Amino acid sequence: MTDKNKTVKIQASRLQELIKNKLMTAGLPEDSALETAKHLTYADLSDIHSHGAVRVAYYAERIAKGGVTKEPKITYTKTGPATATFDGDNGQGHYVANLALEKVIDLVKENGIAMLGVTHVSHTGMLAYYVEKLAEAGYVSLSMTQSDPMVVPFGGSENYFGTNPIAFGAPRKNGRPIFFDMATTVQAWGKVLDARSKGESIPDTWAVDATGEPTTDPHKVAGLLPIAGPKGYGLMMIVDILSGMLFGLPFGKSVSSMYKDLDKGRNLGHVYIAIDPARFTSLDQFTANIEQMVEELHAIKPAEGFDQVYYPGELAILSTERNLEQGIDIPKHIIDYLESDTIHFDQYGNKDAFAE
Ligand code: NAI
Image (cartoon, rainbow, N blue to C red; front, side, top):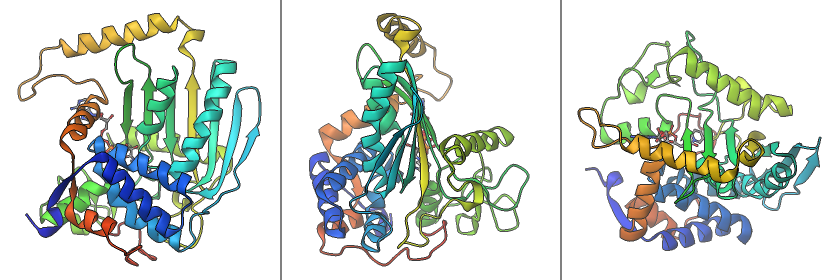
């Protein structure tokens, strides 16, 4: 195991505190730093480490260099009974997208359905975080967001769409809600980085090289592949249209790059569509049906090589329970950075989307 892969165990509360402090040192006000720290800790607790503490050095660099508005002037505009925009003035994405939830809940409570576009924000992180909150409030929801163009469209050899994730959440009678949350690429960029750091090859279904040919060499990756060929490609287009183009934001290959122009706002889009199940059935009946579905899925005989069938999101919930009890495994170099006086490493300035 290389030094980079060495991990240490840390309690969630300590991790959250360290992240908050680092983001405040980089320049974020306490409320924004705290909300971002809660979000990143939620990701690490869920074992979705690609969207946890590993991102702090990058966020700190963008914040310190002026590419995030530290005290954004947010503009909420109701555009119809059930529709609205929430312009984030390029504030910290996790903070702005979380604030917008309050408005989504107001709209869906009143109308039974709501659609709200969060516009001009930086990276909004792990989408399960938001749909789980909407489900806790009793609503079924979808959330989608734009990300930088690092995916080849089906049949193409140049990048166009982002890894554009989509998440779904629904309330449950017992326990944490159901949530499903995925990038529309076969694998997240973080998994390619992981293979690089371990000196491993990658399956030829993940990515292509600069000529558009499938590659097994993680160092040659120039574009990621959509899930299920033309179907994932279509899905990432839908995400881009619903979370960006619809609100007049840059789309496709014009979406800003995570590691470029660190002194400028990213102008990304993020969308919520929320539905009140009580407008179609009773909430009790709906959550009882979800419960029945979970039980029926759990009762399915596992295939060879599997221990059981999990419902979507269940593994993240089980990871959270274990990590809350035993501490979270985080690479030591990340904890060293969080505990240090260093604000950021000048690591990302003007790198392309495929930076380490
Ligand atoms: P993933 O591949 O780890 O999981 C995708 C989904 O499959 C999850 O809902 C998971 O619960 C479910 N799942 C996985 N294994 C399962 C099993 N054995 N049984 C049942 N269900 C199972 O997720 P992915 O695609 O790597 O995305 C990771 C995160 O990255 C997501 O939270 C996503 O929101 C975030 N993301 C954010 C972006 C942004 O720009 N803000 C861009 C791309 C991804």
